[in-house]
Image (cartoon, rainbow, N blue to C red; front, side, top):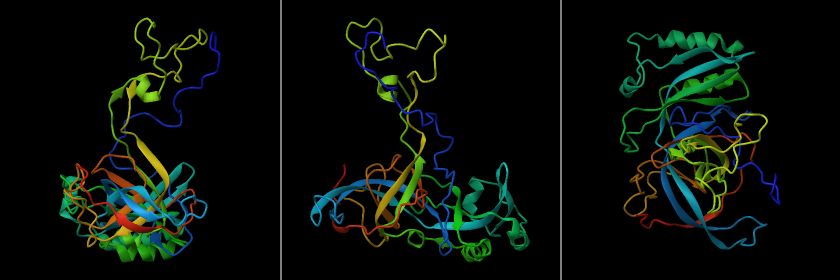
Length: 331
């Protein structure tokens, strides 16, 4: 390293793509395997904000075991999702391909803002075709839509997403998914208190930022010629080009990210008040069922967060007893 007395590692991880996300909703790129009773392996909610709660520490290895401690939490509002269809995928050497799909006949009118609704749709024959092709189907997914209007969000267009139907047998999963067609599902039918889940969403966007904020490189000394908030060198003489590992300015934030094994501390109903005095900052009041999750979650208020069963196999645990939830104003 020339005159340096110590080695310096590359600033910033190369594991993450630092480009703007294509859409605001978190896209699930892979689903976990499931060998239990048939159920949906995901749900979607809207980030309301953060508060703190007082719990009784239940980890035996903790120095605060059986004592009260304050834990920061995130609240997600989870209006019911409406199941509008079933889609079957077949396994090919190039990945999953759609084998057949069936949707309900009377689609909600809000979907006209998102897609062209067919005037004559033979829902019964499509469902029969899907059932006949179950032998070649590798994976079943439910097509659901969110309801931002129930969450009092300033938009009418729903989000359409696919949620995997977890099952041992495809035929068993198809019968389960058929019972959900046209109905709404709530958060307590998918997740429960004490479960670990993965959250998938788009982080808060910060626009174009320099290498100091983007990668955390060192600010150069006062005697540096030119600017100080830049890398000390752009690279070696050979290869005679600027390598991609050199920290440069660029897009910072608004990236899709996945956080693994987030603990659900409580699945609450709309009858239980969780809204702090004056409402959550930049969100308002929580009017539906909600989830209290330990720690922080990516994204801004009002952003849709996709929740998924843990893909890294974290087991369910017993959630600590909640003594109090802070409902003081966050303004």
